[in-house]
Amino acid sequence: MTEFEDYSMQTLVALKKCLEKQEEDIKRQKDIINKRIEEITPKLYTCKIFNKSFTNKASYDKHITSKVYYEKLGYSRKKCRLCNRIFYKDEDMLEHTENGSCKKSRTCNGRVFSNMQSKSRYMIENKIKKYTSQPVQPVQAVKVKDLYVVLEK
Image 1 (cartoon, rainbow, N blue to C red):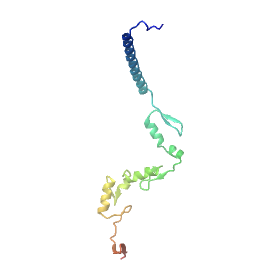
Image 2 (cartoon, rainbow, N blue to C red):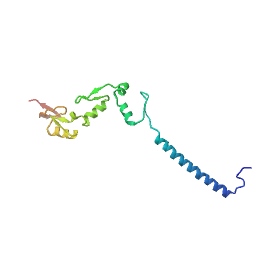
Image 3 (tube, rainbow, N blue to C red):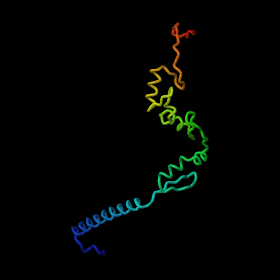
Image 4 (cartoon, rainbow, N blue to C red):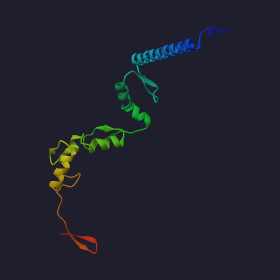
């Protein structure tokens, strides 16, 4: 004989609903406690190459962009040909010169432009070749059967 045999079906259903509500409340409280534990527990950022842990993202980011880190990965140092700033990845150096963050890459004929688009517009308007500060010399060409022949002066 179980302890619930004396109860009516209606009482048992009501008891079940009450227990389910308590179960939901306990689950909700558990979730709140787990979220709070996550908030107060310091997050660790781990470098697997050096087996080091950092408590904040800023110091982790500083570490993974350091000279020691890149050299451990096998990258070699490269200098920007315009400003001598050092880079380890080719794509970082290329972005540095092409996006205009290198002041000298935004310079043409002694003028420093606010962005690369302004410099390009200036170079087109003044017929200046890329990577030189000299104006483009006009060239005469003659079309012969879908080919252009350049005439030297």
